[in-house]
Length: 276
Image (cartoon, rainbow, N blue to C red; front, side):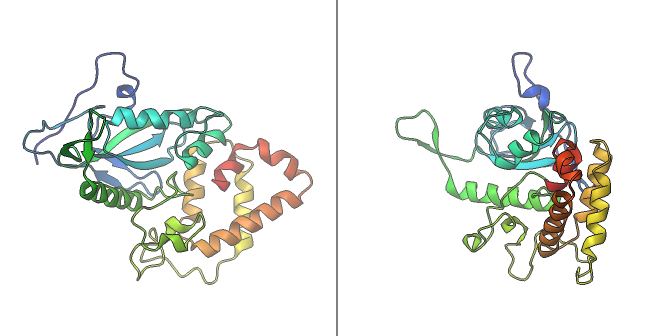
């Protein structure tokens, strides 16, 4: 495969300093390393930059490593401009889970870095101008392909909430049936119940919920640290959504039935990590 070059702006660009000039990246949940997939049309230079279009990108929190995968037909810098507001307290723009992540960190998480994980051939647009615009019409077939690629990276990198900041999977069939935050855990393949399960994971039938909750309560005493976030992710990662619901409910019951803890917990950053 021919090499890919990164071309960054010389000055006055707020996006270029955030772009990681590397074609490999890893899941912050399980540490698996991946190589980017880059395809270019006949008239395209093999260059990645803030002006790249028709791409899949990943945002990674510079503090805790939490990740989000997105797709865009726009220039990377234009799409990132919409995400930048998620790190600013009080802003209502951008992805909800990203806003929640930064808002609940108590000021610890303030920025992200950008990985361009995939580039599809061409611009993702037709050779026909949009009405009353200088932009060309978006090619719906390429948009569908790009969204499928986005979903694939969400599944590979395990960035769906609560392990990352993605709150939906666009290719989910019959997703209207799942009117809840757990819809993204259901695979678009009818034979599988979840998109993020491992074939070797046990059935979760004999899980001791109270033991899991007690372990989570221990984490409340730790400082906000990437090491502990990873341990919490690993603790919860293999469980079915039905188990996660029970864990969440029991955890909140124990927290807010404790007269001392319920007044302190909202000042403990690890509580928001656990809930997230």
